[in-house]
Length: 308
Image (cartoon, rainbow, N blue to C red):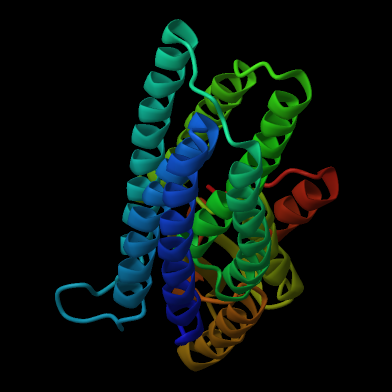
C-alpha cells in the first residue's frame, strides 16, 4: 500500500475536526437539534476517521514473523469501530429529538443553521469524491467505510436543509426534531452495513463470486496444461486477496514444467486481482478426486461458479 491512503485519511480527519467545531458552534447558536445532531455525527466521524488513519498505517506494514499474513485485518477493525460510533451517535440524536418532540422546541435561527449545513455539504461532497476514488484505487476496506460514511453525511445535510426550509416556510418547529429522527435512523442503517462488511472479513469469508470467476477464467485459459484442481480457498485481509489451491498436472510432466505453468497462473491472477497473494500447490494427476477444467468451462457457460 502506498502513502496515498494514509494521506487522504489524515486530510479527511483534519476536515472532519474543523466541521465538528463549525457545526457545534452554529448549531448551539441556531438552537436546531438537526444541526446539533449533524455535529454529533461529525464527532463520530472524528473517531471513525482516527480509527481509519491508524488502521491504514498498520495495514501498510509488511508481513513479519508474528503476522505472516500481513496486517490487513486492522482495516476490518476500523470499519467495526466506525459502525459502533455511528450507532452510538444515532442513539444520542434519537434521545434528543424525542425529548424535543415531547417537551417542545425552542426558537430556531434557520439562517445560521443553514450556513453550517451548507459548509458541511460542500466539504463532504469534495472529500467523499476523493475518498471513494482512493478507496477504489487502493482497495482499502477502511477507506471504503469512510467513503460510505461521507456519503451518508451528504444525505444528512440534504435532509437538514429540507427540514430547516420547512421550519422557515411553515413556522412549525416540529420539522427540526423529525428530521433529526430521520437522520438517526439513517445512521443506524449505515452502522449495520459497516458491521456486516467488517464481520465478513473478520470471519474469513470467501471472495465474492466475480473474483472467483476471475480465478476460474485464468485456470480455463491454461486448460491445455492443467488436468484439474481442488481445495480452492479464498479470503480477504484488508486490501489483500488470499488465494490457495491445489492444481493437478499430467503425471509425466516434470516438476520444473509444472512450476513454470503454476508461476504463469500466479502472475495472471495477481494481474487481474490487484493485491492478490496466491499460493499454488502442484500435484501429479494420479486419479485423486478433483474438478476438471471441462466441468469448470461448463459452469462458466452456465453463469455460476462455486469455489470448492
